[in-house]
Image: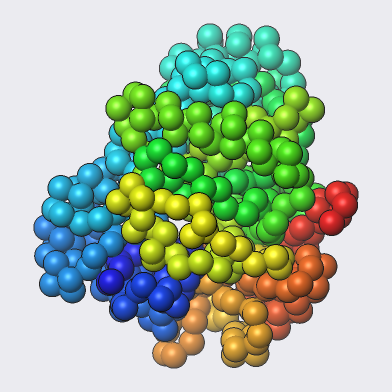
Length: 425
């Protein structure tokens, strides 16, 4: 079959790469894709919002399955428009994508169906929001309701920080429309893990657990980013906790969405906090995580194209989802000024010293080619992924590669994966 990936970032690069060696897949297309993806996909620069041009191209290329990568097209209803045009789609409908598109929708659903999460309330007015935040004590979590590229969350350590975040979001300064409604919730103590799952509307098959590193600086300091690195598997999600998460979170939310008339098809991402009481939901995302995808899919040993098509057809089988017993690490390289801003046009040196190394993969998030050389073209620039028999070897391999790559203002965290060693590996 022919498969088309919508998107052009690091997640989509990884998806196209994994699909390119699926036995069931003849050809991979990417819209718009990127220059870095041209090794694994035929890229076409079409805006996904131009539904007519998009559908015409997909039909002309006889595309059988469309994989929608980013959250924005899903929340906008692209999957519905493609299904209406006759395509099989891996990705939730507009109604189902509300799990990510609206924090309030997700929290209300969890409350209705007794899915474990933090105590919360939602507000559109500043003063009641401040009063509730104060009642929860410190630290307190302030979240913009809508999409904010992974950055619409403030963990306020002081009352002043909380009040500034509430004012910024509700006045529309910080996140525009995404922040016109805020969720204020109690701070959950514990360690985070990301558990992604393949879903066909009813059946849930979880992937390997990973752990993202959201803050820009080592030691989880500084502002939130879209993710500065990740590793898998994450030992904090023990086999017991994994079973609890499936039983109390993943399956119940998929059942709830079906009951509400919004059957969920695609990748369901559960951001979990492993608390003393067990796993609780931090957030749901309606697609593969970035950079979680960059460590989860290099450990996948099944036929990704077939699994995605089975999800689209409502025929997902657990036995088709198989994994390597190795470890994977991804270190994100970010540009100068990130996450407050990004820097474009800085020449990236050293890629040729890394490309082709055994079980090392470069997934491009924000690059473009100028005069034959890759330059920075976004906040998060490049994901350096390494796979090895154990986590320490994967870390050593990834950081050895990072040391070979240089561009002006390059930022990266040097402590990816360190929390894993608190657990018995």
